Every structure is written in structure tokens, then in C-alpha cells.
Length: 199
Image (cartoon, rainbow, N blue to C red; front, side, top):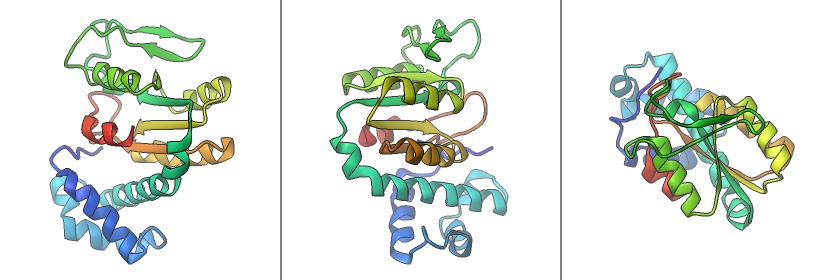
């Protein structure tokens, strides 16, 4: 489990720039350890070295895929925003979201103004996205196939986003990934400014 909330957003830009300059996206395993040490990601996150390297590899792969797909994504007219339900402020009965098993998604009812899901749903709706709050990555394929989107933004942990890259390639849908700033199965976090920039 990781928590990137203490890592400044400029570190993500520096990570991508360094990765592209050094060709790191092509040779992740050889250079990721160097980046972890330069940016002190293991110390900042509290991850052991192997976990920090995996996190950097995931992040670089997602950022690189975003970069490659950006132009095609921007041309897409019908877009979806897929949010993980674990970002909800409450994952119990305090959350007033209704679950629709047919889609499958939680329909946010805006019960808490400070809830990240509420804020992200509002942002997505304002930008013209169809927004889904999904309980797991397996729901993404069902939604994308049924609704015939030609662009998608997904918010998830690195391993889920990497799996999503294969799905998007199979479905021929350009996508953009936003890495959770704190992962886990509950009380996760996302950076709304990053999401806004991607949208």
C-alpha cells in the first residue's frame, strides 16, 4: 500500500520528463531504482525499495500511455470517466449512493460535499463525461462495451491502470489514466487538480 499525498505534483512531471529523456519507459527495470533514489520515493512513501520501484514503473507506464494516446483521446466525442468506489468518504451506510447492478455503478447522490467521489463526479459531469463509480476493474469492460465510448479516463491504482491499458487496446479506445495518490481498498485518495488537467 502506498500514499503519494506527500509527494509534490512537480515530482510527477519530473518523473515523466526524466523517463522520456532517459528512455526509461523502454527500460524500466534498469533505471527505475535510480529514479526512486533520486526522488526519494521509498523514503517519502514508506515503501520498501522493491515496492517503490514497482510504483515508479507503473506510474511511468501509465504516463507514457497517456502521452501516446492524448491526441486521439482529445478528438473523442463520447467519453466516460471511471472512478473507483474506494475513494468515497464512507464505504458503509453513511454513503447515500445507490448501486445499479445492471450497469454496474454507484450513482452518487452528493450526500457529502467534501467526498472526493462527489467532487470528481461533479467535475466529470461539468466536462460532459458520463461518470461511473465502479466497484472494481472488471466492471470497466462491461460498461465500455455496452455504451460504445470512444474515449475514457480511468482513476485507479497503478496495477489496475496497467491492466486497463490491455483492455483499452483490445477495445481500441484511447484512454487517460489518473493514478490514485493513496491506494488500498478503502480511504484511498486522488488529486482533483490532476484529474481536472486530464479531463
